[in-house]
Length: 458
Image (tube, rainbow, N blue to C red; front, side, top):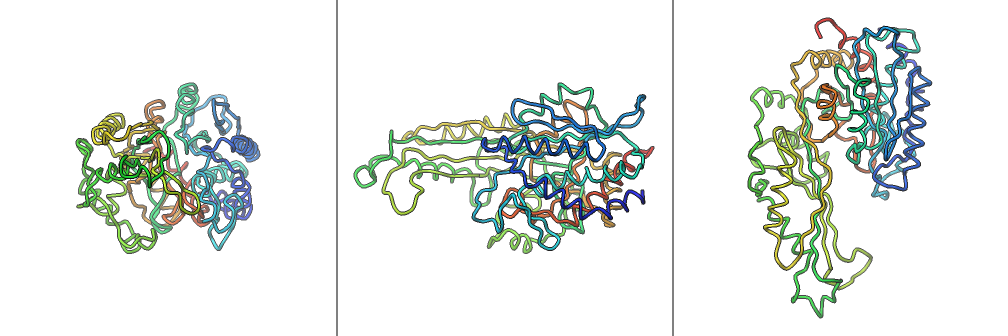
């Protein structure tokens, strides 16, 4: 292992330069105008994987291609096989005016690398590629076979990946899937994430008059869709943060005593969290800690609101429509289809007759929960401790990676969620960054992980 670790240490400057090249691709999957950028990024990734000694190919889909790269197999395979999953697509960078420097022009400030996609997910996944490079370039035998699956649609719901997994099920069958697309509480608190929240997404539109109306001539005689939408959404929760939709909590299980004790090891205080988020006070479902509220409780969130005139100056109208983008984060045992059904039914029942409600369904996924006591999870904890020289913590995370359930259902493989992102990395926000110490430690984690996962007791 020492020659592998030495190689990683000696090549950090080049690794960072290569990561910057990767980050320059504006691979925004949600915006159709960036389709050429996604293709160019995928091709760059294939070439890079081949350069470090992997067999790589570009797999076309109905949308953005999937990159598959694998270690060369012996004629008589006998090693365990693990998959490393990641994504090369990124979130839209808007609002651009809030970025200190352009989002696709990487900037290094101290030990932080700023660029869209730096932590979510290019930098985190790239750390695993560099670890494998260290094995291959030093002639150090890898104790297992590895396949990298890196997609271009994660930020828009992984639309093509499920079918891809089914089509290539035999090739991709593995003992576990390793994913670094989550986070850790601090650089001194490496973590294994054993639970993710699920999600349902939808959009609601309230239609009022056939066109925008003069607010002086007609205001007061017709219901204002923007006001009606605000009033409808205001009914969803009470002032204690409790969702008022009947049945919303019926399948939710509370955290165990053991989990709550582990939560106390979480290093961030409420005061620190307020400062990080820039809020005067925290707010959440009454009776639960902030850590539990944002990782183990379901939510109803307004992601966007729009209606009427948005330009400069005044335009006195009653708008013809009002729209909201909504997501509900779900926890273990909640069925996304059931939650979507009861939420939509409640909205229909509570929508005033003065406007017409339209609901457009979006993506959805179940929550994910895996035992942190499994042999593979324990191997991952040992690798984390060796890389960071700290006792790792077990944590739930509030975000969603919908494809982990597909890995379980189609490949029969659990996922090891070994996040390298920090709370202040601004994933999905302006000035996204990735800490270069985490990048380096992540490479060491990956190098140790393949050794730990192939121990006889695992």
